[in-house]
Every structure is written in structure tokens, then in C-alpha cells.
Amino acid sequence: MIDYIKGKIIELTPTYTVVECCGIGYMIQISLQTFSALEHKSEATVYIHHYLREDDEQFYGFSGKEERELFRLLIGVSGIGVSTAQMMLSSLSSDEIRNAIISEDINRIKSVKGIGLKTAQRLILELKDKVVKGTGSSTSALFSAGTNAIAEEAATALVLLGFTKANVNKAISAVLKEEPGANIEQIIKLALKKL
Image 1 (cartoon, rainbow, N blue to C red):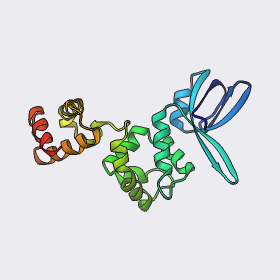
Image 2 (image 1 turned 180 degrees about the horizontal axis):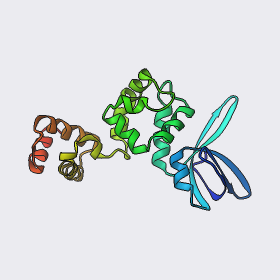
Image 3 (image 1 turned 135 degrees about the horizontal axis):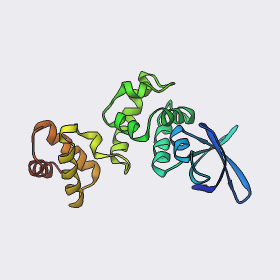
């Protein structure tokens, strides 16, 4: 299985790139996010998802592993194929997609061409826990702007104590629902009781 292709960018468009590696030109489908990341480069490392079906073989490329991981999560949802996942990554940034899933923002997800209400609901239902547990999900998406800094500090402290990020985020969310004005010490103490 190919993990990445590193080489010279021969051609770059908003939907695909051709990367030459060892005398072979690889045509790779990309999102607008990856296009923006590669736009001013002559050489690049493109992380690959190899899509293989009976009648179709494609390389989907990403500028980083996090974007590729999100793409793989998206295509794992029933009703979302590679084209729709690529459209999502072109319409919204990876962080915007994660934040929309975590905050259950159906309208934001529906704003992507080709995604209706049922698909958006299914996507949130199937991916919310996976996105929260994933390394790419940010704690800040779970908390309101006013409690952001305090909640992130508390989360960092609890993770350093050995708790998993997913469990910490759930505990702090629960604490902030009960005690929205809690300071950092109160958040940590109450979260420890829930962990």
C-alpha cells in the first residue's frame, strides 16, 4: 500500500495534481485544501488514499495525514463516497468539518453540495465519537468562547494526569453544563469526580 508520494509537482489544478517520482508521473485527485497547501511549491509530499474498485482506480492525495484521516472517516459513512468526501474537504476546512460534527451543526454540513438532511444526521451520528477521540480534534470546539482558555488549561492538566483526551473532553463538557462559571480549579476537581 502506498503511504505517500514525494516528488516534483509537474501539474497542479484545483482538483488534481501530477507528481513525478522516480520518472513516473502519478495523477492524484486533491481537495482545495491540498491545492492551497501545494500552490507555491515545486516539490511536495502527498499522502495517498488508494481507491480501488472493479472498474475504477484512483489516488486521492492530501497535504497532511490529518486531512487523509478525516477523508477516510467520511467515506466510512454510508451514503458518502469519495467524490462527496472530496467535495466536503474542498468546501470546508478540516477543522470546520470536525467542529461541525462535534457541535452537531447540521446546517453547516448540509451547506456542502450533495449532502442532504439525512446524510448530515448520519454523518454526525456515526462520526461524533470518532472525531472527539481522534488526535486531530481540538478541545476548543467543545467549549464556548468565554470558557475556552480555562477549559483548555483544565483539559491539558487532566490529560497530563493520564486520562484520555476523549474522556477528559466529555467530563469537562458535563462540568461546564452544570457549572458554566466555574474556574479552573473547580473544573478540574469536578471533572476528576466524573472520570
